[in-house]
Amino acid sequence: MVRLPVYRRILSDLLAEDRRTVHSEQLAELAQVNAAKVRKDLSLLGSFGTRGTGYDVGFLLTQIDRALGAEDDWPVVIVGIGNLGTALVNSEGFSTRGFRILALFDADPAVVGREVGGLTVRSMDTLGETPGLGDSAIGVVATPAGAAQQVTDALVAVGVRAILNFAPRVLTVPPQVLLRHVDLGTELQVLSFFQLRRRAGERSPAAG
Image (cartoon, rainbow, N blue to C red; front, side, top):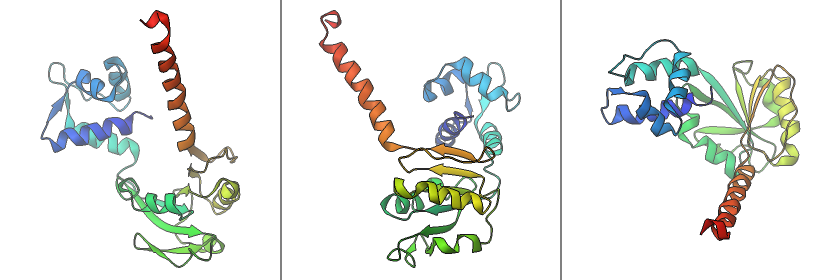
C-alpha cells in the first residue's frame, strides 16, 4: 500500500522523540489523510490498536517493516551513474530498510571504472555476469530517456522483475515485471498546474 512508507516515516520520527503510543487521529493529521483511512490501512496488517490508548509506536513500526519487506534483503542495481544516479547511490533510502546496492552500471567508458559510494561502476556489457541478480533484485533506471527502454529490456533479460524508472519516458515491460515511475518533470508540471489555478482564483472578482 502506497501510504505505508509514509506511516513508517512518521512512526520512526515519533519513536526518535520517545513517543510510545499514537492515536489514529494523530497519525492521520501527520500523514494528511483522514483517521478512518488510517484505521482501514492498518487493519489490513492485523488488529494492533487499543481503544483509548491507540497504537504502540514500536510494535506498529515493526509490523509495517514486515509488510514492506524491510526485514528481507533486496539487492538493488542502478544503471546510469550520472548526476542523478550518483545522488541515488549516496541517498539514505537506497542503503536502509532492507535495500542493499549490489552493483552500478553505465555505458559511458569515461564513467565505467569510477568508484561511487564504495562500488566500482561496471560496464553494461557485464550485466549478465553479476551474481545475485534475479527476481528478488530491483533495477533502477537513471539513464537519459533515449537509453531507458534498452536498459530496461536488458534488466528484464537477466531476470530482474521490479524496476524503478527515473528516466523521463514511458517504458514497456512484460506483465510479470513491476514498474514504478518517478518523473520529476511531471511532478513539477502538476505543481505548476495547481499554482496557475490558485493564481487564477486569487485574481477572479469572486475571490475578493
